[in-house]
Length: 258
Image (spheres, helix red, strand yellow):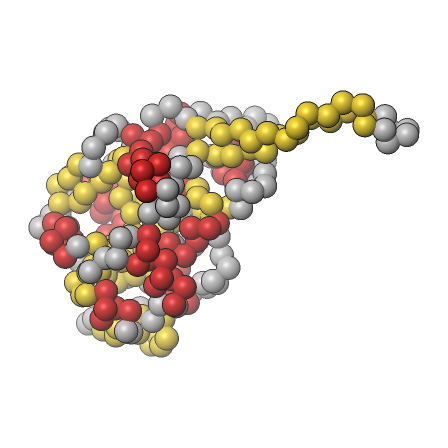
């Protein structure tokens, strides 16, 4: 596996475990075969209400473009026309009403010891722990799903969902990598035409400002339904897991499965 603390994107093959943080009673719903999805609109409203970036995010499902217009004499360098810089926010209709479910993504960098995918010790950094405590409203419990590829595949199949780790970009400047991701089905191949359309609109929910990077999010997105309130979906949960207190997790937790 190849996990780097500075990576903006974590490949599924590098994921060692997923964690869902929250109240124990809410996490118990997952074990009772219910997955709670919510529209990202609620995160926008949280920042509007709390004035707290982290517990909410005004830019959920949006892309910022910084624009400036300037004309100059190429021979003398004299600027004779200049428009003040402006920020343009781009979004796709209905994206913020797509149901999403978020987990924390754990990789090798989140472990103090590693023997195999079935035995390791989770030891999150202080920066990550502080982010999780603040951004997730001081959660009391954590549901850990080790070696989660089967879980990921099952959610995608049963709920017809897209799934991926979130990509983090510096929203203070224009980012070509983000633009290519949002406008192309395969950003690694050159395409004659790049378009930002509804079919790719869900990808906006897989991009966030780099200030959120310690959240290390993995997101499931349901594409065939729009919601305005959180909704629970039936799901057959039959996977290895640990349900522990955040205090135990943050103290360093050994994971061992047969």
